[in-house]
Amino acid sequence: MNRNTPKPEHIKEILSQFNIEGTIVEVTPFGSGHINDTYLLRNESENLPDYLLQRINHAIFTDVPGLMNNVLLVTNHLKTKLSEKIDSNPEKEVLTIVKLKNGSLYYNDSNGDYWRIYHYIPNTKSYDILENEEQAYEGGKAFGRFQLLLADLNASLLIETIPNFHNIEMRLNRFNDAVKADVVGRKEEVLQEIKFINERVDQMKSILNLGKAGKLPLRITHNDTKFNNVLLDKNDKVQCVIDLDTVMPGYVAYDFGDAIRTIINSASEDEKDLDKIKLNIPLFESYTKGYFTEAEQFLTPLEVESLMMGVLLFPYMQAVRFLTDYLEGDTYYKTHFEGHNLQRTKAQLQLLKEIEANKSQLQNIIEQVSKLSQHFVS
Image (tube, rainbow, N blue to C red; front, side, top):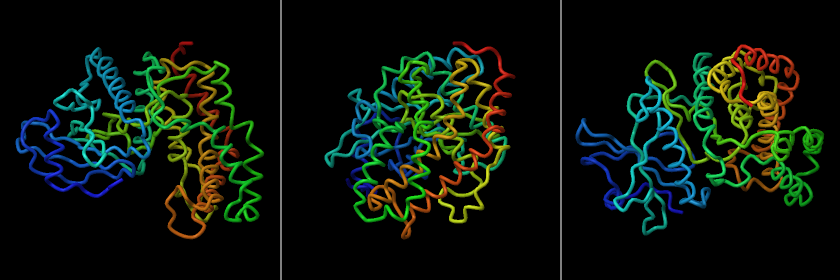
């Protein structure tokens, strides 16, 4: 796939397909995303909207029509729900898709690339890294509200845009295949890590097994709950959840655990000095409080119990993915030095050890915050 910046004449051809207002006078690369290519389109008139043009990475999202149907279903539902609230502004709090002149949601160009356009939401900001407890609270509130507003939309209407994305059983099967094949002869140096992973297999399948048994409801979840997928207003209050490409059926604990994995770690994801990996428990507590201000209205008691399972699962699953790639010869993740995937693996396993050592305290925070909430609806 050609990932180069498109030439002006190609941009003009793409834009001519869409129902955009005014005249676009400036096109610049935008954001820090690693999957899709995003460009900010500046309008000549200050009274007309600016736009975001995105080239969808269809090597990762292979069913673009299904993906865009997901986004349309979700954004329409969110806007309908928010329109019922007196203090809400759906156009500022939800992404708006700009359709093509023929009514389609995306444009497939002569190069085989897929393009879409959203309205740009002005006067907002995002952070790649959390800076304080207030932001953690807003992040929790953002994803709690996102799940709440979608709780009454039938999850079966959405496709899996990346099949088995958070399926630990599938991840472990591939891991075991990589161990057996040992294609680059690295197995012997990671026996300790393999043993650590294998000792926790049954525990880490808990959410999946509860879901298969029908004990956990299948919800519509975001599945990429990094903090930079939340737009905040000028006062650092949550305004809009973005990056909806991985919104699909899932379990609430996946979103909670995915967010906590990045929030709670005091060091980087690939920290070499394992002694630096400690837990930022105040950020954990703030995120949890923010989350429950919204999610308390729909969570079942077992879903509340499952949140801690998600906190344990996600560093484990990320370690499984890193170690699988290491055993396969570093074919998936970009690496910046020899042994990078192994260093990432060790860092994630150390994070898991820290979480396990502090599990009682973290579990107690969840229980105490949930007790302060109102009744749960089963």
